[in-house]
Image (cartoon, rainbow, N blue to C red):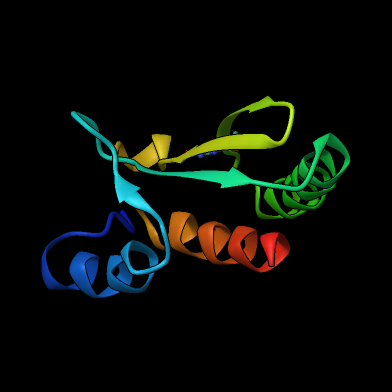
Length: 98
Ligand SMILES: C[C@H](O)[C@H](O)[C@H]1CNC2=NC(N)=NC(=O)C2=N1
């Protein structure tokens, strides 16, 4: 069964993320966030922790890093949209960035 988020469930799930710096991507079913850290070591530490969680979840981000910045896009390829896995990974990433 598809776990694609739609309708009110999608709105409810996204609300806390949109209040915390995430945005719905332009023209695609995805969420994005730009993180800024003190320096490259902090940024890469964040990516390392997020990568371990992503691998455990078998749910992987699209991302890029430039010095102290990390640009993240989350989507669920298997449902061609957003799923609770994106929400879970987004919240974990926000926790690692604190
Ligand atoms: C075979 C493997 O489980 C799948 O390809 C996983 C891997 N990581 C994934 N990551 C994301 N973001 N979406 C997926 O649908 C997905 N599928």
